[in-house]
Image (cartoon, rainbow, N blue to C red; front, side):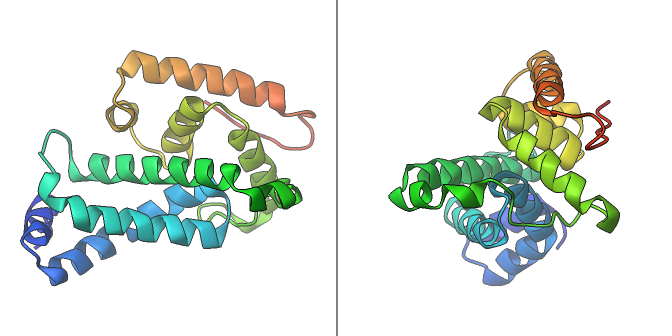
Length: 186
């Protein structure tokens, strides 16, 4: 069974093997997306676990109004943003604010020679407003089609394009020295 919609229906009926199949299909996408948001390996693993727990609990609520892929990305984005909000509210993060200065992860999609530039870029991405960050990560890090980004964010394609343009402007302003890092944003 490789049709994600059928897999979700099986999960809703309590089929644990179907859940394992869905996990294998989506674990890398979910983890990489969470990692782009939380910028910490352990936190990304926690968010990934939360996402799949949510999927298992809510499989029977999937209506089919969007693709399973879009539905799972939406859960991942929401879980990541909720995790960040919870982390930022905790007293512990106030005392460890210096750990937020540089991301504690290496994104799997970044080549070895670009690791320093990647850390700098993800720090700049993290400074974006939430909606711009989401549009940017889904479009340029996860390389999703713009329409799917719009569907995940539940906004129009035009609004997505607008968010991406503002994110690009903000990123260019946040990059202090263009010679420090070469960022190509199309």
